[in-house]
Structures are given as structure tokens and as C-alpha cells.
Image (cartoon, rainbow over all chains, first blue to last red; front, top):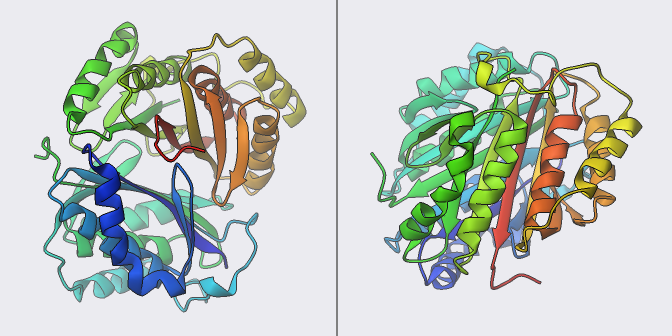
Length: 202
Length: 202
């Protein structure tokens, strides 16, 4: 299954290029496990979820350490029928049998309960889209129920769910949403925004 | 049908608050036709597509006139089964019978052919998601075919399509994608990023 993300980092400062290039070192550990391509709008990361989400987390935490208001946006996808399969994406967390929704919520909660904190507070909002099936709202509501019990749920908004908490738990919860909801072999996408150091944060 | 967007404006400058507040005047004409709510991550715009897309266009063109590198991100949705219907969203461009894909492509092309230019060059990329139907890729490929003939097609990327051209035509093409592809009464979302004044633009 093909999986990956188009990510963009927005530091709200005159030195946005410096903040971005300064944060790129945080990708060092992950580079050999990802295919990476950059243009003027976003950077493509192709790889499995267990590499993608920690890589996005470490990049964003590094940028946020600048103290500047920073936002990361990611368009994340797995199983798009139009994308070729790629050996770099092989992952134990994708595919497999479809287990009951309650078991998946419990597994997602167990997975994030062991998360080591990053020390960086963030706010985030994201949408989960499940395609090619007529029960997509059941999966979305199941995911929202997991998020409500995740410890980083803030509130439901139109079109998305807002989270707030430590960056490591927030990225962890988004990663669990991506791998455990929607059919295991299905076409799933996320539209994710993560923000730190906002002057208008509550 | 409920329709709207969560939008965020990212000016890459120390004076990001000034650029954002300076651009908000561009929403003046549209405010009475939209429901607007702001928090620290995004601003909700609830209203019909014929108001939403011009409002986003004018806001972004106003911010970009600062000369600073600016990005607008929008999570746009119509017909989500979990959202209540709202009279402010009533639109002639939503609902109605499902006409053949080739006729919709032709209608979308005709609609943007009359677009008055804004004078602001932009790059953009977006994804169209069609839910609750098993023919979602047919609609997505139909939309991509329209975009290829739109005059602002740049190239296909993993997970999204990249556009480049005048802001008015780019926002027009994205708006046509939103209203004409996917079932008329279906649940459709877009994940949209528009960029201006990037130092790394080709």
C-alpha cells in the first residue's frame, strides 16, 4: 500500500527560511526510511505511518523550539487507488483483517498511553476522510470517540476535530486515527493542521 | 445542504498579525452572507460556494498585496451527514440532478473562461475527496481532466493536483471542482493550499 504526506511548515517570521532550514536536521534519523521531494508549496514524504508521524512530530517540535508562531499542515494519504504500491511503505500497521471498531478504539488508546512527552504544547485540528465505502461516517464517529478519550481532545468543530496537548501525544493520536480507522486496505486521507506559539491561543 | 470552510492565513513575516488584520477588510462585502467564527487555528466560514470562493480569493489577494510570502489553507466541505442544514448555505450550484461527467467538465470550463483576472499570480495545490460512494475515483479523475484543460494546471503530484496562474482563475477552478464533481447531494471535501510571493517558486 502506498502511504505518505505532503507537508508544509509555516513559521510566521521574517526569518521563516532560517527556521525551516534549522528544523530540517530533525529529519536526519528518518531520511533513509522516506522518499522526500520538495517544491515551492510542500514536501512529499513517502513511507510507512510509523516513520511518517514521528518525522512530522520531530520536525514540528524543532521548528517550534524557535519560539516563533509555527504551523505545520499535512495532507496524508494511504491506499489511494491511483497511487502505485511502493516497498518503502510496507508496514505492519496497514492491511490485515478488519477487527471490530471497539477493539480498534481500545488499541489506539493503549498505543498512545505509553507516549513519551516532547515538552512542546500544541493545538491541532484534523479531518479523517474514508473513501470507497458507504459506512464512512461510522468509522469517522468511531475515530472521534477514540479522540474524546485520548487525553488531548479539545472540542469538535465544523468539518474537523480540535486537539490540544503535548506534541508527542497529539501526533500520536493523529497517527492512530490514520492507521486504525477506515478499512485496513481502504483509501484514507487526513487534512491536518498543528500550531504552536500562537499569540491568539486560549 | 451545509457548506463551508475552515480557513487559515499564514503570512511569513514578523508582522503576520498586521498582514492578516489588514486583509480582513476584503471580507467586508461577504460578511452578511456568511457565518464567521474565529479561534487560534482557523476561521470558520459557513455559506454557499458562490460566496465562499470569492471571499477566500479576495482575502488572499489582499494579504498577498503586502508582498510578503503568504499561504492560505482551507478545509472545505459540503453535504457532511453529520452537519445540520443551514438556510445561509442555500445555493443554486448545489443539489439538482446528476448530469453526465462530460457535461459537467464542459460547464466547469465555460464557467472559468469568463473569469476577470485579479493580477495576483499564485501557486496552489488541492485534493478533492468524494465520500459515501464506490465510484469516487471516477469523479476525481473527471475533475483532474477538467483541471488539465483549465489553463491553470501545473502538474499532478502525489495526493493532490498543483495549479499555477492568476488567483481569480485558480480560485475559480477550485470552486468549480467543489460544486460540479461528486454527487450533487453527496459529501465532498477539499484540502486546499494557495501560495503567493514564495522565494522558492519556480
